[in-house]
Image (cartoon, rainbow, N blue to C red; front, side):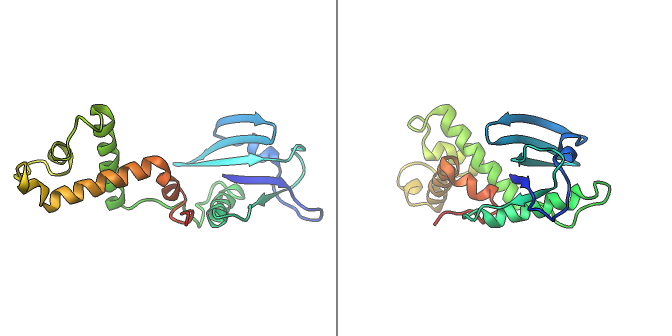
Length: 181
């Protein structure tokens, strides 16, 4: 989210009127802390927060200094590239997952769906591996399954999917910059 507030005296820039009259405002909510909006430009969504009450004063980006500061800086740079001239493509692009990352994230989501729909207790790791991770797997049950690398990888993927569900997705949204240590 890009946060805007009134720029210090002597600075020029766009005003809140530019956001209010944006061609594609998908959502707008007035909160005590300011207006939150979701703007669309081409295929990218931008979340902004307007802290300024006066819509005619010039605005400045506010970047809180926390573990997400670099992500917010990139977001403001991406947004700044289009807000000044909406007709030309901007220099900075938001981070996009590669095809491999997209497939892996889809696999993790599928694993969560299978575990959540059937329940963690009723679906064995062997069944999950056979249904989604290794369709056509020939590894049987028992000792062969317990000692297989397929079982260990399936367990790791289940743990990774649960970790992603329980907050790990934040690092993904932050482009890896917002990982908590």
